Image (cartoon, rainbow, N blue to C red; front, side, top):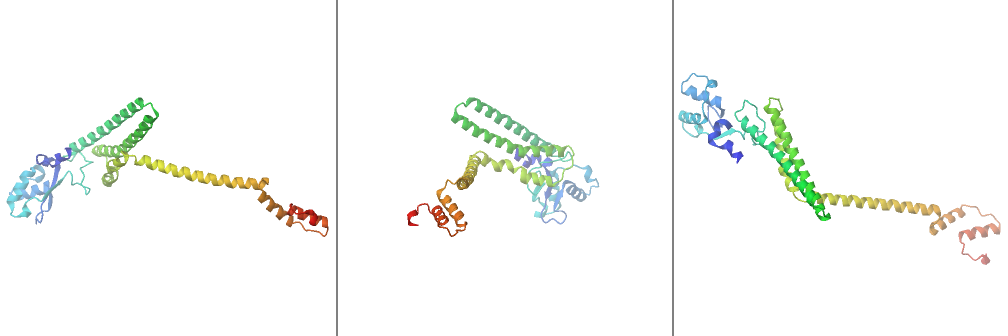
Length: 280
């Protein structure tokens, strides 16, 4: 409803800044001063255009009388929604613009709406926590609390920078024109783009899935480390018979066997304890 007010014809003197005439040899898109000067010259009026405040209706009618054809009929208007290429309303205005009051009203309205959202959702969160005592209801309350926190956070990221910049701009503080483009393209869409995700359980589901993956990876790594440490401990303590046998075998093979039968017998006995001594 508020968006239609600048398009109403009754308010065009406030919101319209230029009128576009197509294929006109005298002017294409002209501001009020340019069109006023053209009309005064045609009427042979020497009054300075800066001292005359003619309405858009009068200028359109006067220009249509100066010539015939479509080139003397207005093709379109530019103003409150045409000041930038993104075709949004004037977020930031100064006091020398006629529509500054309406822009300030929209920013104040958005600020009050944000404050109302914060207060209302905080009250809902407080009441829900107070009423829910069971475990199941407590989990549901916690889930809703997370959604409310995300909603308030995204609203704050959207409207607090926009409103603050608008207030600074209207106070006369110089701000780069590129800030308008960044605000319109990056900041303003945050709220509307993320709402479908915030109001669903997608974030919670992704969070749970990510935690499960992390826990599984940690468990797998911990199991691998524990298994390696256990094997190393068993080898050192000689608890593993296979490893003990291999270790003794390597040890005995490293000892040179002398020509005595006693040493040969003891060495073979250590290599293979189950060998029949009588066969030797």
